[in-house]
Image 1 (tube, helix red, strand yellow):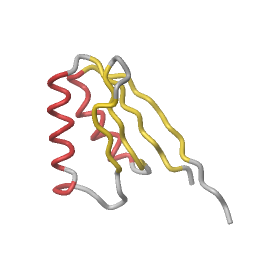
Image 2 (cartoon, one colour):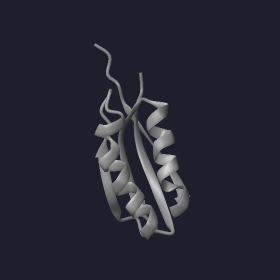
Image 3 (cartoon, rainbow, N blue to C red):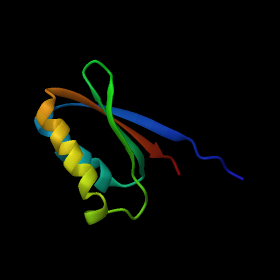
Length: 84
Protein backbone atom coordinates (compact mmCIF):
# COMPACT_ATOMS: atom_id res chain seq x y z
CA UNK A 1 0.00 0.00 0.00
CA UNK A 2 1.43 3.37 -0.98
CA UNK A 3 1.08 6.38 1.24
CA UNK A 4 0.39 9.76 -0.34
CA UNK A 5 1.77 12.82 1.37
CA UNK A 6 0.25 16.20 0.89
CA UNK A 7 2.36 19.17 -0.08
CA UNK A 8 1.63 22.78 0.82
CA UNK A 9 2.45 25.87 -1.18
CA UNK A 10 2.07 29.54 -0.26
CA UNK A 11 1.33 32.45 -2.56
CA UNK A 12 1.51 36.10 -1.49
CA UNK A 13 -0.98 38.30 -3.32
CA UNK A 14 -2.56 41.70 -2.91
CA UNK A 15 -6.30 42.02 -2.33
CA UNK A 16 -7.06 42.73 -5.98
CA UNK A 17 -5.39 39.49 -7.12
CA UNK A 18 -6.81 37.24 -4.40
CA UNK A 19 -10.00 35.96 -6.03
CA UNK A 20 -8.40 35.43 -9.45
CA UNK A 21 -5.51 33.46 -7.91
CA UNK A 22 -7.85 31.23 -5.88
CA UNK A 23 -9.90 30.46 -9.01
CA UNK A 24 -6.73 29.71 -10.96
CA UNK A 25 -5.47 27.31 -8.29
CA UNK A 26 -8.78 25.47 -8.08
CA UNK A 27 -8.87 25.01 -11.87
CA UNK A 28 -5.35 23.55 -11.83
CA UNK A 29 -6.73 20.55 -9.97
CA UNK A 30 -5.19 18.27 -7.29
CA UNK A 31 -5.95 20.89 -4.59
CA UNK A 32 -7.35 19.47 -1.37
CA UNK A 33 -7.64 22.55 0.86
CA UNK A 34 -7.25 26.31 0.56
CA UNK A 35 -6.55 28.72 3.41
CA UNK A 36 -6.35 32.49 3.17
CA UNK A 37 -4.37 34.38 5.79
CA UNK A 38 -3.96 38.09 6.39
CA UNK A 39 -0.54 39.76 6.53
CA UNK A 40 -0.33 39.05 10.27
CA UNK A 41 -0.73 35.31 9.59
CA UNK A 42 -4.27 34.98 10.97
CA UNK A 43 -6.43 32.55 8.99
CA UNK A 44 -9.42 34.39 7.52
CA UNK A 45 -11.04 31.48 5.67
CA UNK A 46 -10.23 27.84 5.10
CA UNK A 47 -12.17 25.47 2.90
CA UNK A 48 -11.77 22.01 1.39
CA UNK A 49 -11.82 21.60 -2.37
CA UNK A 50 -13.57 18.32 -3.04
CA UNK A 51 -12.99 16.53 -6.33
CA UNK A 52 -15.84 17.30 -8.67
CA UNK A 53 -17.05 20.39 -6.81
CA UNK A 54 -17.32 23.13 -9.39
CA UNK A 55 -19.55 25.98 -10.47
CA UNK A 56 -22.63 26.59 -8.38
CA UNK A 57 -21.43 24.54 -5.40
CA UNK A 58 -18.26 26.60 -5.09
CA UNK A 59 -19.94 29.96 -5.77
CA UNK A 60 -20.76 30.86 -2.11
CA UNK A 61 -17.17 30.17 -1.08
CA UNK A 62 -15.80 32.28 -3.91
CA UNK A 63 -18.20 35.07 -2.95
CA UNK A 64 -16.72 34.98 0.57
CA UNK A 65 -13.21 35.09 -0.89
CA UNK A 66 -14.26 38.12 -2.95
CA UNK A 67 -15.54 39.88 0.18
CA UNK A 68 -12.26 39.17 1.97
CA UNK A 69 -10.34 40.50 -1.04
CA UNK A 70 -12.19 43.80 -0.70
CA UNK A 71 -11.08 44.10 2.93
CA UNK A 72 -7.41 43.10 2.81
CA UNK A 73 -4.46 44.76 1.12
CA UNK A 74 -2.16 41.75 1.36
CA UNK A 75 -2.95 38.08 1.82
CA UNK A 76 -1.28 34.70 1.71
CA UNK A 77 -2.97 31.78 0.04
CA UNK A 78 -1.92 28.41 1.44
CA UNK A 79 -2.88 25.43 -0.70
CA UNK A 80 -2.63 21.79 0.25
CA UNK A 81 -2.00 19.64 -2.80
CA UNK A 82 -2.28 15.89 -3.06
CA UNK A 83 0.79 14.17 -4.41
CA UNK A 84 0.17 11.19 -6.62
